[in-house]
Image 1 (cartoon, rainbow, N blue to C red):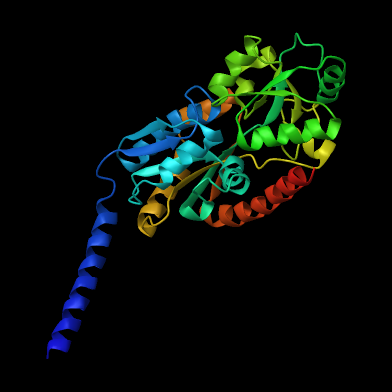
Image 2: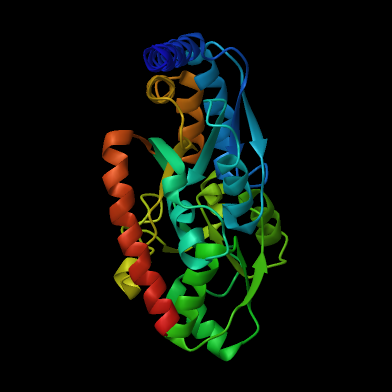
Length: 314
């Protein structure tokens, strides 16, 4: 009798938890959602995030507030997001390449992509090596040649993968560049335009500045549409960065809430203001649903491992 009563109690508890979970998903969202951007304000990710947050908020019927957490090549903000409750009230807007790179390159970084629920791909960064037109070099090859005759050039990077890729190129050419760390495009641009650095890694923010900034090379598999004469690092060295901007949430989020977030993000792609900001920074509108993004993420991880192994071996 006691055993039967115990089983009934357990069953009732499980049923109650199921009802509560369903109720939670049905009532969500009841308060503002935080969109973590792991870079300083003013960069490309934060610029997109500010407009996307408003569009997503309209779709979900609540405020979505951008919270910048720069540092560590996106590691600080990513770790912060990982440690938040998996209740649908924290999401992370992050470049796929840096999201994968940090834990692969730095074992002490306490997160992995498996700690997150993949929601969607939003756009594609226009990643490149950039400088200003007043410099005596207009291409990456000319930059290398100039460095050999004039050592001591410095470069603005964002740590992590950008620094490693730049160091790889330097090693391939037998040159040294002094790294100047920045916390995102919002800090890199004034460094570059103010003459504090000779050239820089850019995730795409340079495209807002027209002819004030030139592209020396694309860091992606293909050449950048707005700089078709600048070769890609894939052409030159067989290496490339995955350029997708993705949205994720802490692992453990309910399926129904994750589905609502993904649907909201997809609908936000048609928002007029978001369309305008993508046109302004000249990024493509490239929504990738979670079901397609997950295998692409795993394939990108394999590609980054090849690059990382080559850098370590070199």
